[in-house]
Image (cartoon, rainbow, N blue to C red):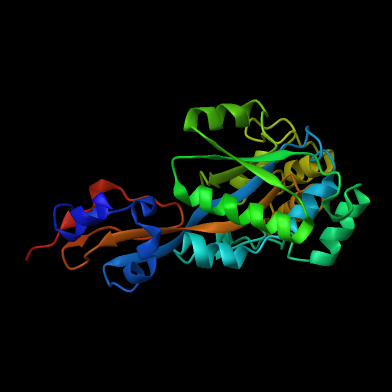
Length: 285
């Protein structure tokens, strides 16, 4: 609210961090000509600890992924016109078309949970969903997921807000059950998202290991033909999301900045969310 008030009063020229906009004002801000939305390389997802029961069983992970209502999350909570996404790699990344992941299917979710030994949620052990507590957005999404899992599957999830350093430390040490997660791409190519989940990847942080996924990624990145490479990466992403399911994507990020283009030039929405100050200038009045 402070950042927005400074901008509206003319004390700052532009805001380039979407987290500085109050979500309750999103609809009104989007209608203004000096507020600009653009897609960029970021994904918000749920991460499972695949070394800790009951999430050692991929049927449990897939069951939870099959009941999430992504449009409701972006329409009621995030409210910045993010793209609901069952895939990890955002649309438009380097010309790649991501495959669909786990789309809502309540009967299949209940069947998988029963096959894993928890019919109607009976006998499901106590588990926690961890999130970093400095943002109310993460808390609101956590509450939505908690309600969804209880109503759809009879599963009770406890919420665990964490201070930022503890959140990162617990993720690195695999000291969690389920955890809110996100990733911002380092470069405009699907590999910047998919190689996170290689078995020995330093950013995997799920405990999931899949030699077939590893081989698909390695083969793809040794393939010179762009079309064939993207086919292999799509196979790898489909395996990650539909078979192993160590993560469940919720939505792709958007960028959102406030700027009067009649006063300031050189700021443009772009996939990698880069805004070099050397290109920014004030227009003569």
